[in-house]
Length: 383
Image 1 (cartoon, rainbow, N blue to C red):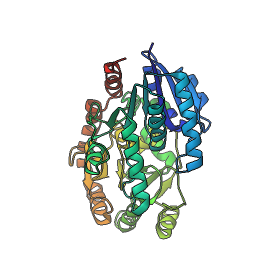
Image 2: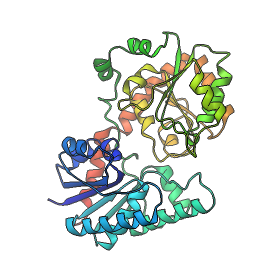
Image 3: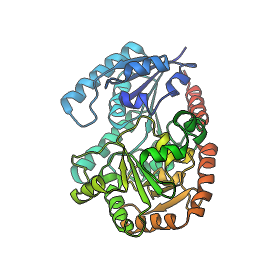
Image 4: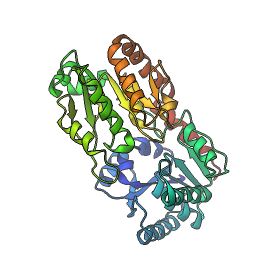
């Protein structure tokens, strides 16, 4: 059986992003996963039935540690001798593709899930772009996660290699039988009961945001829009799901204070299972500045939620205006305010888009179809 090594920077990606996919592929290849250990690796081993080898890999740039990680990856690949090496996440991919080239691994696949240089300036942007160029140079096959990522790789002159998006894009797709109202209600009870647990009334209009609560996710614009809407729409509620970060990419102090004190905002922190929270909401709002191909939009759509998103990679590939959501310019507080206001005033349009939202995910991003497209690509590679 041919050996496949999958590399991610952290085992968080193995545990969440690649959940189930590694076990599926293990039916056709001997799958070995490699990542840094944050405490989730044992769970991945048991769930997927594969070997997981831990190598320390730092997410941020750290020359001494990165060189050590590079050496450890090279030594591992020389020992394992896989026919296919496949990496995603920026740092893990840079080290894996470089080590794979040095170890003479025949097929080195870089699946580009996001471009960290987008939104950066100056020297840091140059460094990040150079890292992407090196990663692509040492890969034998570069796969952009979506059309937006493909266009960015081309327009920024990152690589001249042929670029082809698998299926309709996204790294793993969504299991719409799992992400469904019926499945979620069986586990958590009715939508109405769960809304009551969260403190929402039957006539409340609930927007949900899921992600890191930071500036680059558009939280400043979201908070400012909510401030303007609150006096006019007391039944407007916001459900915040995710880590509240307080470092370099933090939101403004005024907006931070507002969201923490606003009686109409319910913060529930990071959740392993976001399905009941999506079930409790009426629409997703996701005003991010940059993405690769955000899974939260697929998950919301699977649960029948339309989405307000920004005109960025991934978001504008899933959402079509008036069909399953609304697209606005990034960093545009007024556009976000107007879109949210329009949706609150027109619940019939929300119901119509809700019906289309799930259908779009089932037709284009069903998990089994994405996995089978990946498997077909692997099997097409010559031994």
